[in-house]
Image (cartoon, rainbow, N blue to C red; front, side, top):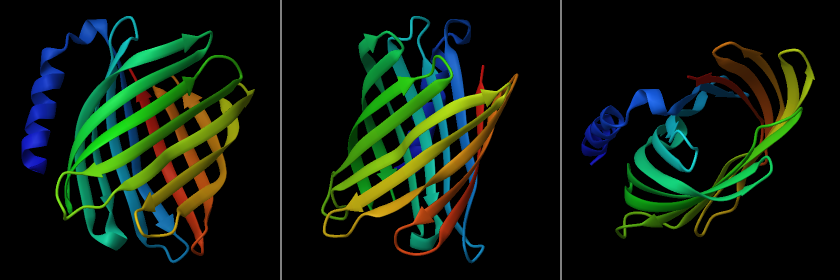
Length: 205
């Protein structure tokens, strides 16, 4: 199923006129825990329509400690725009190690001014008895542009499968912007023990 979804992603991207869109690539290639082991990788491609009303996304997620892989595609509509705040209602379909999922989600963005923030909340609804219902916040962020390209902020990740306790990773981050996007370093305390160190690269074109 993951192979079919990757093919669908390539076809959909190819049919959208590039000169009428804004593209965002969110690369999180490395997250290490306190032992130096890779615990999380996430690669996201997003494209908005020229007027910003519609959003298309494709994602690949890997969680090595759980031997978990996920590919999802989906999109949504900007339901609210109030000054600098935008709210998107999204729906993804995913193929994962433990089966298929439908994933309704909410994305909030405030990217204007020196204070900026974002929130992504998603529910995993399994399509078979192999999967379980899950809640994900990846992530809740706020940051402040200190001077020039430098911004400081805080980031929180929360995850809860049905029948299990919350997994949280909360901590500070530093971001340096450039003409292509931004590079971030995050350090988070894990509620189940230890710390996570994540490198993130954002590309906007």
